[in-house]
Amino acid sequence: MSCELCGSEENLSDFLISGANQEGSVILCENCKTQIESGDLDENHFNCLNDSMWSEKPAVKVLTYRLLNTLGRQDLLDIIYLEESEREWAEAGISNEELLVYKDANGVTLQAGDTVVITKDLDVKGTGFTAKRGTAVRNIGLVANDAEHIEGRVNGVKIHILTKYLKKS
Image 1 (cartoon, rainbow, N blue to C red):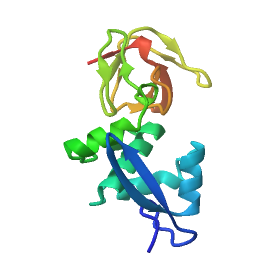
Image 2 (image 1 turned 60 degrees about the vertical axis):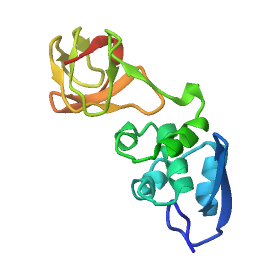
Image 3 (image 1 turned 180 degrees about the vertical axis):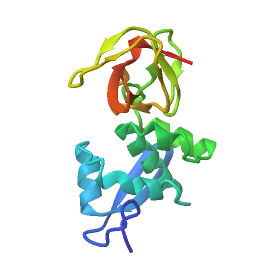
Image 4 (image 1 turned 135 degrees about the vertical axis):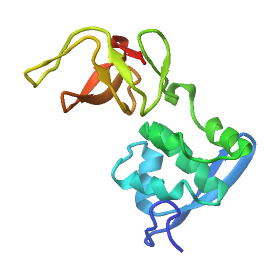
């Protein structure tokens, strides 16, 4: 037996997943369980979710979905496959405050990988350049736990940009 998230074989115990009138359990190691219960997630440790998201066990997929949402990993949330009943179960355990929606200056929803255009000249702190209005930023990333920022490359430098200065192209 091993942890159904990270594969560790030490200090295993059951962890109950409930919501939407469904229930199931997942076998977790002490490290995963402690982080989940405290809410203080180590993103590096939970890179293991890349594998657990493909589990055939519904409770594992539901927990993985919830953790990916908490970590702000929209890139993986976009590709995880859940049956309709599993998705309802997973979303039942997520408060509305945790569902981050990234919107540009016009209110259009942004997704990881989108291309956006900068709508105002922006001084980039820590560099010697200004991100000019009209500059296209391709393949954007979503900043975890902050729906007002995205990250992207401008002049070869990875920067954080406020969504209010962007429009989706």
